[in-house]
Image (tube, rainbow, N blue to C red):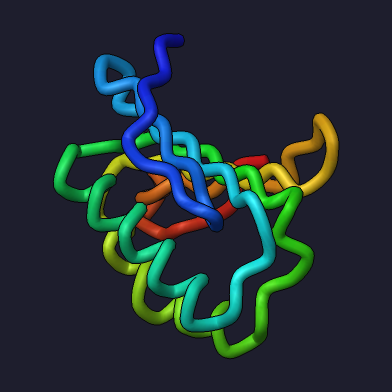
Length: 115
């Protein structure tokens, strides 16, 4: 894998491998709700503009996600990837991946966890 730094700030570091259409986002500290939404929107905009279909989110430095932000994520962001063949993965503990979400599922076009 050949990751190239796209951007980095005090909250996130975004790296990509364009050939693999892979994006890696590392949260560097706990954001406020508005900072979370602003930073994630930048990542999503980049992913959509560059036809990224695989993403790893390292959230080990982000201790929690407010319920309102979880709802925003489900309502505003997830639908953007629902019609694309995409895989998203979260890493929330040392060497542990808590889930993979693929869009769309091959059976009936429904979204469901794959691991």
